[in-house]
Picture (cartoon, rainbow, N blue to C red):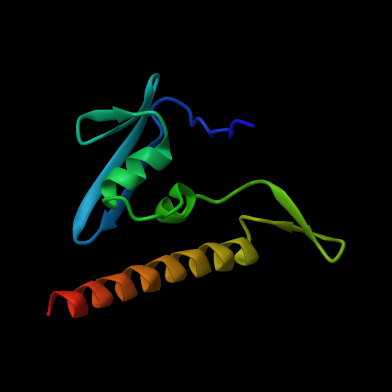
Length: 110
């Protein structure tokens, strides 16, 4: 089954400082423009920005979801503190994984 990709309205701008550099992605009619190139998805642009690191685009840009999730019979807005905590947890796990990989690579180079 094909995965549904969120298409933001043309002109939507996503900005963030990443590793000391301000990055900007703009939704266009044909995809997402970053650094003069158009990518098919926002995730593809984020992958280019992060040089292949696995950050979900919503986490990378801090995009809040408007979907509702149920937990113990109670509806939770995934854009709430619970959703933000889950996004932060994913971001931390990705960062720790990347740091561990870098350290292991350093050990093997020495």
